[in-house]
Length: 361
Ligand SMILES: [Zn+2]
Image 1: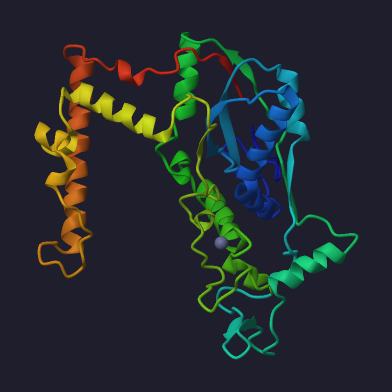
Image 2: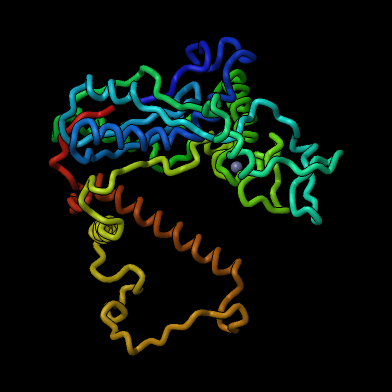
């Protein structure tokens, strides 16, 4: 599933007319895409009448618009998926952002006496968040500032468990799990680089939430405004180059997909690593089984204070953790390598949900 078009693009994903490409809408769509997906699952569940289970990932397309791949457990007619996608939308009822009145270099000022953000020249307070919302409520002709919808590229197909097709689908869906959004997209040409930069410029001035400092650029004080806001430099994830606007979780799995909790998954992962490494005792116990079974009374735990003489400096602790993690990773990779090329190790803990049947979108 993917959001709609912002203008004609070439085969490399870059706009034919960069100056006419709707970057603003592209930025807003990326920021609000997670809400659109939420709506979609809600609508789909209502439509089919059962708690649809899904697992998938959101990633940027070649033209940098967010799109999503999902595996769905069960069977749903393609027409239903298409109809629900076409009928799904998310309205953003935020104040209008038609005119950018300030810039990051010429921002509004914080006035201590008024405890408000004011125009740097006239010292008039900017519209408060509450007033801006009231203006929308009282205006009978008010329109949502943004509406995000899916485009018409909804591609659904059936996948049967245990087939090569299923394996390929799982690989496809999980391909980007460990990557950041920007890593999913390699800008190889100057055109692609410029395209990415233009989208990023827009993302930097797009409000990410009702508390985003970027509202100040549009003459509005965000909710709970305070003196430390830096318009154009909000730290929200969606503004960062590495996320390309896809700031939330990118791997989305419905609660009952596997029937397991996060703790179960962690235990599974731990078991898998142990089996692979041939470790039979606790990994953090340095091979000493007593540590695992030690009665609680043998230890007294207390929080370390910053001035504790036996606590090394933070930098040392961080470096030690990093080197430990690096060592673990190297050992894991070596063990995986051995399992692949040497005598077969038991990696069955990895296989779960072998009963999966369903369609992918
Ligand atoms: Zn923000």
